[in-house]
Image (cartoon, rainbow, N blue to C red; front, side):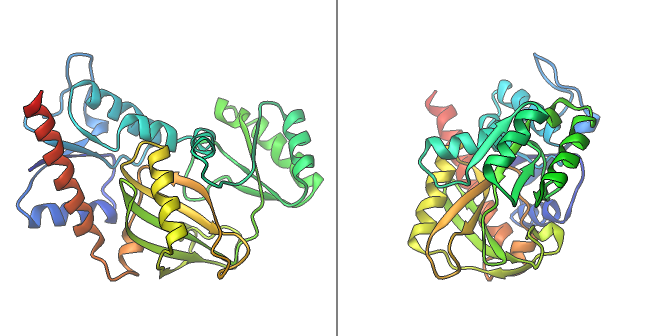
Length: 294
């Protein structure tokens, strides 16, 4: 198998993936998107023999554009640019989940500080204000009072970038000090973990403690439906338990298209990189069969 890895920085996640691919004697073409050009007729990167390209770009903008170009060149891409486009934008994420009937936090989008303030008042305190694009819990705010809301909205107003003029406001979901990250391949879970913290943000990137988690039937069904809602692929599906750990009720608050798995690999018995490569091999075979049939 000839695999292209799109990247802008090699993190531990990419090292785990590269190690597994090379252990299986797959040919790997590392494509640093910062060093190449992408034209309508082709790219300076070597792509002629690639069976599959895996997007591991750290930058969202590079990810979205690079995958579009590779798809244009007729190279199979994981994840597809359509999936990446939905998952990279929290508003599109929420719309896709709601359209598929997946329980997701109540959400309002506003475009001015006045209408955003009205929405915050309607939610009541606390509520949550998030950037529409971003990861690792950055620039997310739990708003506990009117004065805090006014200050944060004013701060976003002067930041300049147009995305900060899109005010994405959600209800604050009472969760049992943790959320659940599921790594899934086309809706089939590879492994899952809880991320626990005394802080309201429980991301592993924010220092949350991780522990393996066994999904029940309700969670399994939600993961599959949520994955289908955004077009499938290798995804990180994030759930919160509504009503406590034993309630068996969940809300899906986000799906990540360029999912990290080093923390997950460190707390579960599953060999996560091996499972990911198993799936990539199956996708490469599917892609080859489609080319042959065509």
